[in-house]
Length: 98
Length: 98
DNA sequence: TTGATTGTAACCCAGGTGGTTACAAAGTCA
DNA sequence: TGACTTTGTAACCACCTGGGTTACAATCAA
Image 1 (tube, rainbow over the protein chains, first blue to last red):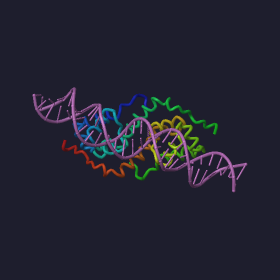
Image 2 (cartoon, helix red, strand yellow):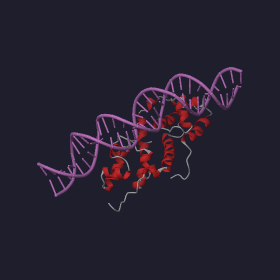
Image 3 (tube, chains in turn cyan, brown, orange, red):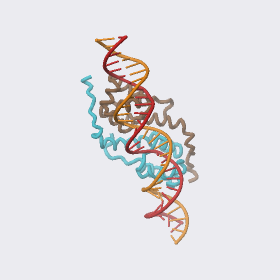
Image 4 (cartoon, rainbow over the protein chains, first blue to last red):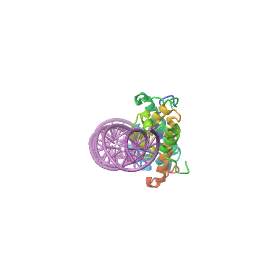
């Protein structure tokens, strides 16, 4: 369980891959085989890293593997969801009253 | 990297939670605050465990936490995606030609 | 200044998650 | 057997997301 609001995966992707390689977003998108818009949305936190995108990143840049990218995305998604868990309106299962 | 086709998360959920508690799917769905159909689809591999569903499972049954459910879902999704990674049609980035 | 780069809006499409209702098939039990 | 419960799933709905293209304004860099 994370304690603090985790950075969105796009920030990490931008720093860890694109900036560290010194390539442009346009270039990275082409290498990944997706549109510039698709990558841009992820980098700016307006889209998630899908399983397919995670595999693309792994195949092209190899560095962090696909599992890693999905774990980062999970951490972000879970944080967001837990922030509003009251809305789920559920109660713990009563194992005693089984 | 998994070596063999992982079981879909629904199978695990069915065995680990529902069957082990001896409750019905109808009952479990009510506790989770979702429709019977929604839970049924997951159990039969026709739907994924979403971040929200993962938190519901954690809040209600506590046992495996939400992170675990998403990791199980990731493993399944990644396997499926990697099965067809040729279709992604991408090549490793050439770090030399930087 | 000029050209490259970028974010994003508007629009499209496919698919996924979730809901309700309804029905047929099975299982359970008096 | 008959009655009730449980289950999967079809049909239909709403909404969101991923991904694409085109286009435009803003910004960056040579």
